[in-house]
Length: 374
Image (cartoon, rainbow, N blue to C red; front, side, top):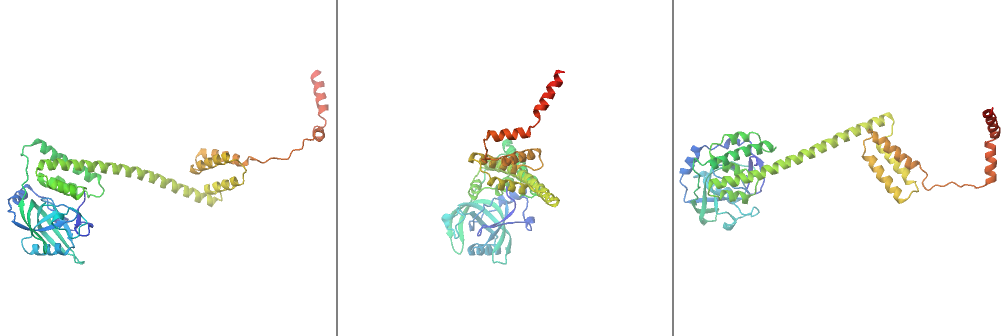
């Protein structure tokens, strides 16, 4: 379900409807009966909507920018204030022809017209009842057509299955409002206080996050019970998507918060080390990399060192394993890889050195033997 919006039929822009919220009434069964008793005019001026579908009973604000749309709204507002509203088949059509609009639409009453500084007109419309275009009578300066009412098949008052579907729609609508961060919590008050079953179905259908074609299909369903079932199906899909989205965002938010916390602590540790004159984690790693460049080790040893250095880089310097890993790499760097000393294999010289360094050991040996014998 979507929050209240101004739907721009010409530029496809959306704006929050806050100031006009008091214009959205909650239709009662008495209001619905009064609308059903209204006589449908034989001919209506037809206003094509580019990106929305108007349902009976629902109030929507529309910003019109096309010359034909503005002229239609201004003339109708001065007269009966009743027009026919249909949706376009394709949003991108700037100047729709008869073949570009749906045949089934909703009779609407103009509640208020607001002229914008940019020349556009915002009009508040309330849907009345469904109609079907019988014959187009005029295309200039705007569409006019002969229309006929499309009756709605309603279930019996004691239909338990229909009542269960209505309760499910209410419950699921409240869950969606509670889970969605974009829908104001006040919307739950509206759902709870809707008395008319048909208005509840139309109100929820109008605010579903589905495309225009899907909404048009809902509008064209004659059976109110069948429309309720289809609406409930769309709501279940929307709720599942919303729950999945919230679950993913919660996990991502947790991971991001954890990363930010670790980054903040690392930055604090780095600052403290610099203040104390110690070597930072980054400096220690850079020093090891520079020492490694001077080593004459094999490619296999170099790859192993880089792997272990990367492992150390990912470690928190405060954990015990960090010092173990650092000592291991220090040993790697201290070993004389492929460095050899020049040895002299001169036995006479070795004998002289040993005799010199071990002078007097024979006397010590003899003294020890004499002592043990006595």
